[in-house]
Image 1 (cartoon, rainbow, N blue to C red):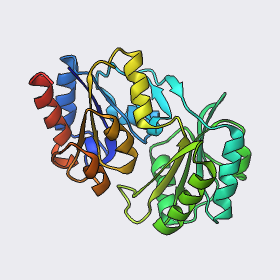
Image 2: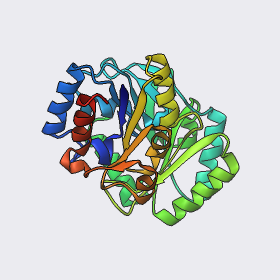
Image 3: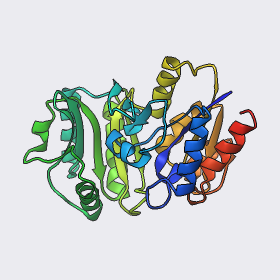
Image 4: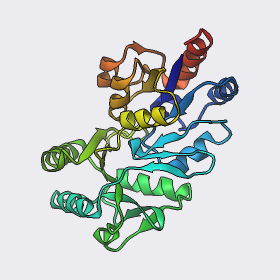
Length: 280
């Protein structure tokens, strides 16, 4: 028997960042049959709850690239992997030395909060406007961002052009490589303005899947994962069966055991339905 985990954007979701009607109906049917399935995404739990609303998910979901394991129905977290405030301050100072301005997501007594201070480019503008449009309750504007790092830091995100982000990523990995994980990838919905995400070293999709499998008695099953971008590489490498969608990046396709159709053709659903019903 197998256990299935899919990325969302560019993999399970359609180009409008939603579940297509076909994928939604198909997953509901399969989940009622007992399909052992969950998702692992860079998205936060609130966003995932909005997109996946109505799916009878029995397993927790993995959000913020493995920083959280949470219950979709209640919105409660089972696990939070966050960086210390001191490490957050050091990372923030390094980003500012590069002349860049990050977004920071924290988790503390007041819950999840997402802070921003100023907008420097089109990519950052889109990031804020999308969250305002979706009435993201975490979003806060701060006069001095570093003062918000009193709580543990879940995600530090920088949106800019590729060259400055690559230089920043290299310095972060050199200075803090044993303490953090980083992902640099194109924004699927606004090419030209990639995102650099920084998380605690324990926050990765493969580690979160291993924890979830152990807690829910799935560690004896073969793991099947689906992805399209660099933040999916860890779970693809950890899988017994790694599946890339046709629109995946070249490095994802290179580690996949199989490449299926593109995300806009419900390829993940079609693969899971066939594999599960054939006794996968």
